[in-house]
Image (cartoon, rainbow, N blue to C red; front, side):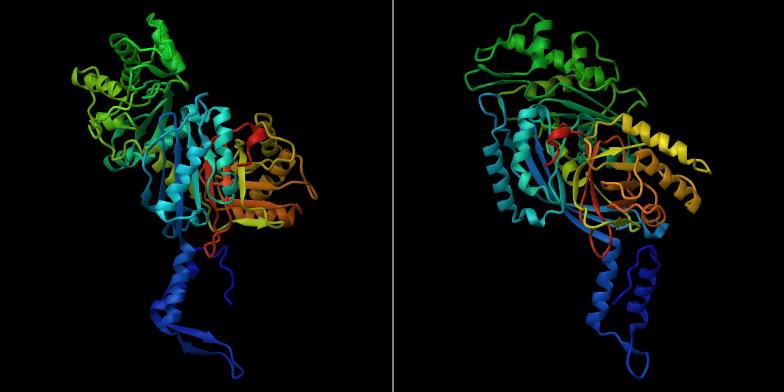
Length: 534
């Protein structure tokens, strides 16, 4: 029986590989003493496979995008590898493979403008059947709700669809800044910026919203979202209006145009409304602040002008018309929006060229299936019984004073400050994000641990679970100090190698063996505190 490798880093892997590929022998105990037998080909193969799995993880992921205009899903395989050459326990994505894409479904709505959950369930079930996959085969994933789908009644109905799948993989997520990030990654814009070294402004124009991300050298500098999209206005085959979103109605009223459901619309008046919406997007692409009635279109604060873009890229349903991959009409304003934006490039109002990042209407779902998952490092600490998996755990991000000598009282004050800004139910698990800086000396880690427990108001014998998420390789040591030196007797999960940004909730999956790592899905807030158990 092999001893566990936790804390040994990559040394064991290197030594074992030398044994497999070089000497090819194994130690054997017998009554006559220890002696060496040559390993069989099968034993060598098994050893090599085991060692590979210690530093490599392959996950099958699903991304489901349910939006105002369309819904679709995608399955992908993600290969993560430990950065052993850098003496780090962190896993990074080294390969992604899309294994199946669903057809595009026009998001089904009932007459009262709520999601037709039964129709959506049938679509998702059929997608699994056609792909040849089953929920049990999925390791992780995310449901992204946008536009009308994010409204409370719709969100709760969709949550019910995935209640039975809440174990380790499917989780609901939403939020304008997260959507911007997913579209920027899933479209290929981030990779394009990284490969070319260019500053790129990515514009994802969906059914109900437009998400922008400014990217430099593969790093997202800022994001912004506005209520401009292809399905703000929709008509039936007879030309009568079947949908008028609030943002479109407000822009129409600003021009004294009266849009009414069930009635036809004058083509010239509709063109004026679409032009006003398009002009708002053109101003944002020009890095200007939207003014006048269009200012109400902002869904987030305006994006600061941190850098001038070298190129512009597009994704979302409207991008299919911009790049001329689609010409059909679906009773909405997608093509008209695309034509207006195209004219702005042609007449010089936008004086930056645009490029195709690779993915259009499927950008967000690709991002959901491939970019929401991180994997912890080797040095994790789990104690007090089986706590994992956990779902929708709120993350607090205290600003710890990471000086040479950590002060317990200062750490406790930072934790209390983070708690005061959070909305957490009593007894609900929380996760503390720890940004570790400096040397991992015992005294510093001990003071950090004591300060955390003091700030949370817990000690030996306290109730509840303690979840720590550390960006450095000190998760196991920190957990050990809390359990053994500070005698914390409840459940502890202390994981490392995770980079947290401005997200609100995380899911932590079951331990993956033999790598001794856990998958972590980072999500933004969707449901209120009372509706978090998907």
